[in-house]
Image 1: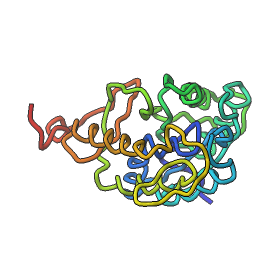
Image 2: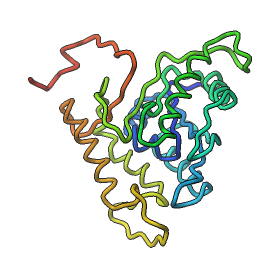
Image 3: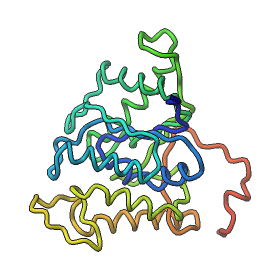
Image 4: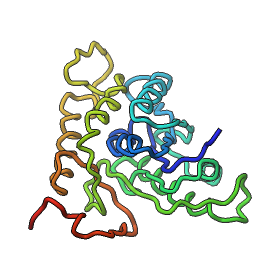
Length: 244
């Protein structure tokens, strides 16, 4: 079995990746890229649903997006651990799956778990390339770590056109029925309402996608931040269909 992937997407909680970059996953998978997903926690402190329910929803969502697999770790929801033990678990995944590019939440966000996730994945991506590191597998260092945007707005390093896969992204989010109020459905949940379960929350996701899309002259987009800028080989093509 070939465990290698082109891209590996990390999230602190189930549904983080879908909200931040689900359209990009669907686009890349549709284009033939091999994609894996990793949740660093079980989401056990979530106000709604259970860890078991969220795991089933997460696996369903991954299938919708076209990922080859989705792995769930247990770093502790609400207090995401970033010690050496957790670092080596990520190194093991990186060496086993050998992604060329890694995606994770920006390491400075409203939710401390998002911040910690971004930091530990970034650091593990570097350590994974150390040949003398006492860890299984052959050394492997991804080309770069790309950060998706969650709560705080940041100037993007680049924006991906997700117009053709936006509906797929929203279907993947809708797989988390325990967490969100899905437009067009009648929720009978008696669980407490949360910030993300309010009917208007998904409208903000849609609005953000339209905003990022407008930045590059398309209907929907997802924005990303990198510590090093991407190389642009065709400046004219990069700005095709736009004007100052």
